[in-house]
Length: 67
Image (spheres, rainbow, N blue to C red):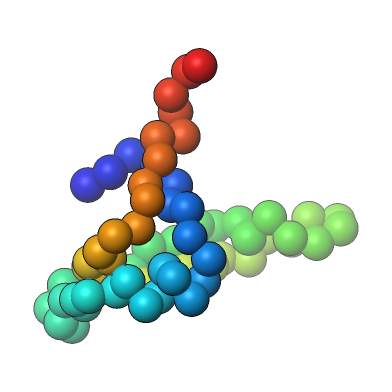
């Protein structure tokens, strides 16, 4: 598990580097109670689910590093 990271790639490079996707037994659903949209703000639950995936050759950077 990684923390405070981001990747550097365009969409095509990123998805073309996907080399493995775990099966449905690994599927996890995560979400939030607020989607942060609207004026005035709205309170809509949102969720996204996925299985563990592997990406090869993508540049990953530390976003928490203090310079």
